[in-house]
Amino acid sequence: MSIAVLEFEKPLAELEDHIDALMRMDAIGSGDHSKELRSLRRKLTASKKAIYAKLTPWQRVQLARHPYRPYSLDYISRICTDFLEFHGDRRFADDPAIVGGFARIDGIPVMMIGTQKGRNVKENVFRNFGCPNPEGYRKALRLMKVAELAGLPIVTLIDTPGAYPGVGAEERHIGEAIAVNLREMFGLKVPVISFVIGEGGSGGALGLGVANKVFLLENSYYSIITPEGCAAILWKDRAYSEQAAAALKLTADELLKLGLIDGVIQEPVGGAHHNYDKAAAYLKLEILKQLEELSGMSSDELVEQRYHHFRDVKYFGEAKA
Image: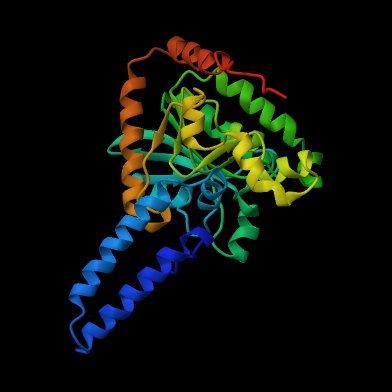
């Protein structure tokens, strides 16, 4: 898989290219470069640690949007067995931007639901760039209600810049569809666990995120609005997106400090796109841990805990002029 290189990763890419060139020379017997290779590998490791330990919020957003970042179906295929996908909202149509169905995780039956992007232009058009329409949220809610009837826990994987804002979505009442999901998810009598695996933008993300526990992957973001949207409103110029990202406090570490999420899930060095299997293993470990913790709660306790999980969010402050 060819990995796209972000601007701040270019020094690392240059080192990796140099290492690859020396390895090819060694392979054809063109001298012994083992000493230089050891030195370059140590330098690469140290540079990776230094760069990824000090990423800015905007750089985290770029990683969250990386074109080769694993999406919901990538995780489901690695974490789950017996995944049976369901389609349609039973009202209008199927929305490929949201996928979902029954599955097993280490033998535990669950309902998996997630937003899904595409890898190329054709796939992105099919998946609507991961921006769900009203029928996507209605499909998700239909599957949640099925899970509730079956007494199965619900796991949602969130990766969307926001719900689709087009004319058709407005005509089919996108705001109402999200609002109904928010209301109904608060009353679900089974465990609900949500994971932001990439972008967690606006109500489009929250429409799948009313959960007993909410987690972010290390290089994901969760925000009321995208940095570009915030910059366009506040500065009337999307060029201020980097400043907006910093002001929004949208990274996993910042949200954890504010008490808005329950935890941060580690990613492989450089981001989940560098090692799908390892990223999936980290995610699976947390899913199993939370399923075990929540399994001991009664239906009423789950509803009450979920209510207070969001009701108790009241951190605020005033900035000095």
